[in-house]
Amino acid sequence: MNTSISGRVQKHRAALREAGLRPVQIWVPDTRRTGFAEECRRQSLLLQDDKREQETTDWLETVADREGWQ
Image (tube, rainbow, N blue to C red):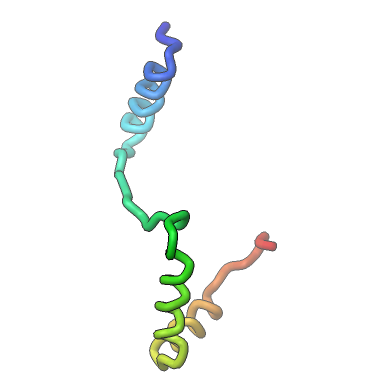
């Protein structure tokens, strides 16, 4: 039995594939990067008085499921 880390990872991935899943790599913004929070704030302020953005926010508030969240 292969008990190395790479062996366990291979076995786990094989089981996931057998279950009909496939790996997908997703690149997301690095929230730790210098300036990230400032850029979020800048973009948010651009939408502050946008009517369509308010409609979207209102809709999200309506459909949000917060059960179990603190």
